[in-house]
Figure 1 (cartoon, rainbow, N blue to C red):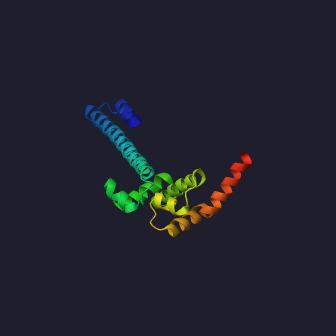
Figure 2: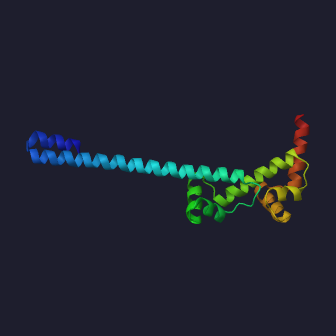
Figure 3: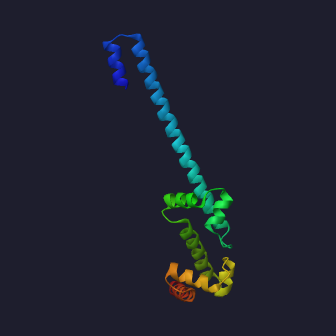
Length: 158
């Protein structure tokens, strides 16, 4: 556009045409700046929402956090929130919640002598069997196998 403007100034020497070209160029620049600002603002709002969700999950690991409850809490549609989270993190929101619970469970299993029922209850599970099934699915070992394997590793490294 700037090249066209230069050409019109050189060739035509017509004030109206030159003013028109200048106005078009300024409008286009304004639109580009505004749209880039809006998209970066939208991206930063989405990233902030993502970070708020992650923080909320970490602070409420002792409860049974559900996607629907998160959507209500943050005031967004469930599908939108899940899609946004998956787009940013690459993991579904439901899967992330489960992974965080299992990370906490692994920590508790290796750091305490609490039994499996206590750990399940501490993580917000009402049923110990659901906890054990989820743990086995995510970690690949039962909670007891994980505790035993990890305690043996600690003995080797001491």
